[in-house]
Length: 232
Image 1 (cartoon, rainbow, N blue to C red):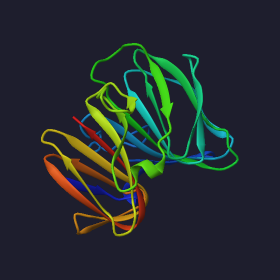
Image 2 (cartoon, rainbow, N blue to C red):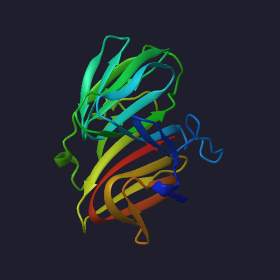
Image 3 (tube, helix red, strand yellow):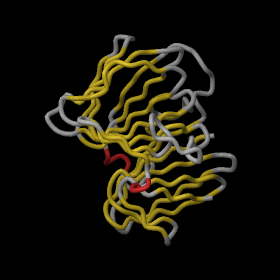
């Protein structure tokens, strides 16, 4: 089953420094039909003004993946970690039994990012954080694993039977993916436009919820950047 979720239909929040769009219920946006997709609980599309951001706050029992689309985000947490993640790169925080952190746009330009929350397989445990560079050239016309619960993958670790994938396609290129039975896929176009299964046009920041078993074929209409979550 495939459910297309256009960007214009997402939940929204805006204040003086944050312009956010929510694929699932979050904060003051509530839609009982969009409480998550499998173990995927949150997919937020955030635009953060320069020299602003999220002050210190707490999380627990959540795998939090941040995919930076433009600009950069600076992370600092109660474990003593501090790092700056640039456009196209990824950071993962396993909140475990509890952690405090801040996310700040210390740049002189807007930062845009996707923040993805996946429920862990087991509650509690030691919190952790890591970041990694993922050159777009390494995922041109192919899927690259950015974060994974499979230790065999050369990716940032997450504590769930799930993968976060990234790919880029040029106009005219084709990319395929099969979502297995009893699994859930969620795709968001970070940039560009594609045709899905030869019939549905997706534009930047549109989302697609996929319930397996289902095979999708993506055809590039204009150069596009894709982020995809596959989870139980």
